[in-house]
Each structure stands twice: as C-alpha cells, then as structure tokens.
Length: 113
Image 1 (cartoon, rainbow, N blue to C red):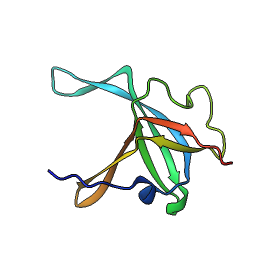
Image 2 (cartoon, rainbow, N blue to C red):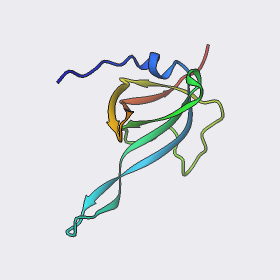
Image 3 (cartoon, one colour):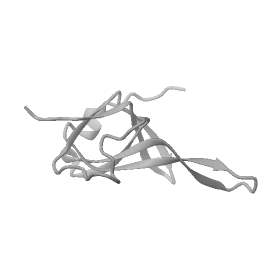
C-alpha cells in the first residue's frame, strides 16, 4: 500500500500556538466487552492552534512519559509557541470526510530570536 508523504510545515504552518495538554489513559476490555479506563497514562495530546492556517485547531499525540506542562499543576503560559520532533501526519477517511491523524516524538517550546 502506498502511503502519501505529507509536508507538515506546508500543512500546519510554521507558527503553532499551544493551548492545551491532556492525558490519554489506558483502556482495558472487560469480560462484558465494554472498555474501562485505568489510571495508567499512556500518552499526552497537545492541542495547538495553527496561526498560519486561519487559527485551525489540531491535536497531536505524543508518547512521552511526562508532559511539557502539567495541566493539573500549572497553566500553559500565554503565547507559548511550539515545534514537534518527527511530526507524522496520516490522512484517513471518516464518514466521507478526510481527517488527519497527527503524532510526534516530542514537543519543544519554540522561542523566537
């Protein structure tokens, strides 16, 4: 199967403003077929606003042991621009609409010079 290569900077733009960080918890399947959430955090989801793309909001999954900012202890500082290492964008179709699944290895605060 041929997978398209998507240029992340051309797709999201260069200016990504961090607005939220949330934990994603492990889900365990019970005997009745339903899923139950555990207390184990398996990844974090970073919500960013694409400033160069009419302020569209996207979520990026990162498999890091600790978040860049812990949302329960500290608020994200205003005007926190970020970059992502090894950003991978994968398109898929859901109900006839093209969606993007986005993941990266690491989130880094980007300070303009």
